Image (cartoon, rainbow, N blue to C red; front, side, top):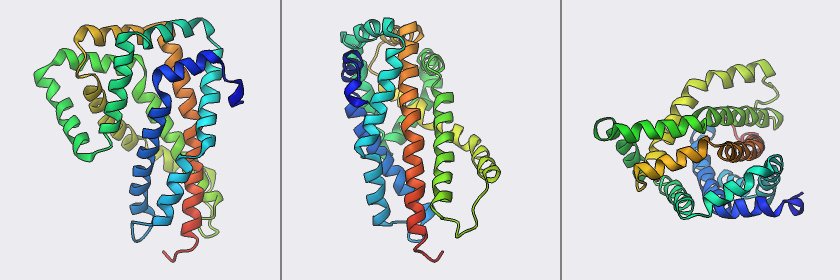
Length: 260
């Protein structure tokens, strides 16, 4: 279906610089794979695993599926596409996209991520207006709830991948056990989501004036902004469970060859 992607959705993708963003997300996935290695494998540094992780996140089918779902979502609300393009091809929109991508790349560095956390924490004393606006932005776009739900769905898919791949040496987890395990992770997932998201927003939008951030919030509150947000989360929601299921299957193949 990639060839059927509409010209307008392609233009939105280009305006949002989604290919660059997905390349950064692939790097984030590899970092996540390194963290998983420490939990899954005795030596905590399985090179075969990291090669698998890079291949799974970088698979062309991932980008194709993302593009297809994103296009389908925008095709359902064609009246909103001109407003989306108008905002993100304007001076402020272009600047915002650049700031978001730069901040996402910067947060790959653990030291920079920690600095962003400290900056976010300092807003309580230094700039409560900016603190309020960033929380409003996150609320308008439902960022915490959408990311928590997406992570929970991805975790569920990962366990299914482990199960289907035979990671449990013939003693399969039943569906109730998997659901209970994933549901039990929700408080930690929510905490980790907020601990990353809010510092990221503070870092990304720090160069914006209050008025500029207000304009971005106003766009996000608009019908066009809500359409775009829904399309992006639908596309992410389509690919991450698939990625996580493949990660689970890959981990199972390695675990099957280890005495743990």
